[in-house]
Length: 396
Image (cartoon, rainbow, N blue to C red; front, side, top):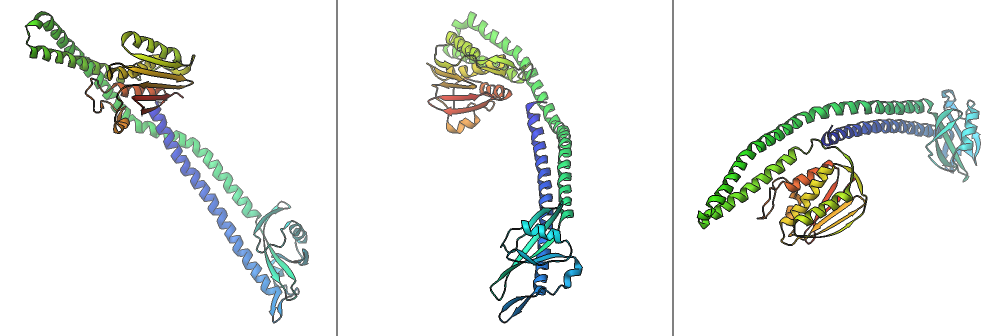
């Protein structure tokens, strides 16, 4: 499974997983909210009923009537307190009422509170009533919610269990569908690479023949050519070299995935070797600050090619190249004193065949190949215009 398929696979899995988790959370919260809302409505209704039964509005204020008890047969749990002392309660569940009264928060009106007492779950509400003699009493109502509590707990466990099960199903499904989705693309990419390889190999022979022909003409009849003929012959040789470089770069792109064996690479030694090589083969000035023994996981051949591309790009656009290289931990900074690029060209710098507004020779493949190599090494690449181009490469 290549890195593009892995990204697609993870994207599909994450999307479906988020949908599933969101559905489970919404289901649980909406069910719990609905139950709580129904309990609140029921509690408020009972409080209103008990208030009408035990409290009588007269001219001098509200009077308490403890004799009325028409709701006794309904086995509804309620009680009335005066200074935290229970002055009215049903005959059943008196122990439960005592437990609740000792745990309940005092002097708070319309308390909607869940309580766990004696392995049971209850929903307690209250209402404050001020009597004619300025005495304040509280009326409480208690609803048993044990079944609702266990129902919600069971729903939560079911949703968690289904989520765990569906995680494995999602992974299997997304793996299957990502492979199906990527198959046509991979087939098209392979056909394209095969076409480029075949075309490149077919073009190499006629280019070699034409190049050999121009060299023969230059050797035996070069002095017989006019100035225009010699100029044209030079242009032909230049274009042949350009085409040959283009074909080699295209072949490098198509072969990039093959034999890309990742192993421990001493990046410090690799960069130092490339500096020494280009100092021998080109007239350039290099200043460097390279930490020793920087190890990364990568392919030494591909990394050497990537660093070489940066050097070749730097020496191509300036007569006296000055290059600064810094390597510290897993960050490589490569700067040159070239003309840089226009700000609008920065976003296109790694596109194939994109050369910007330049008259210099080049296939437009080099930096695209460099970026492909960096992508295979999962390296982050940033480019800045800083008196030339500055490449900041961070290896993970």
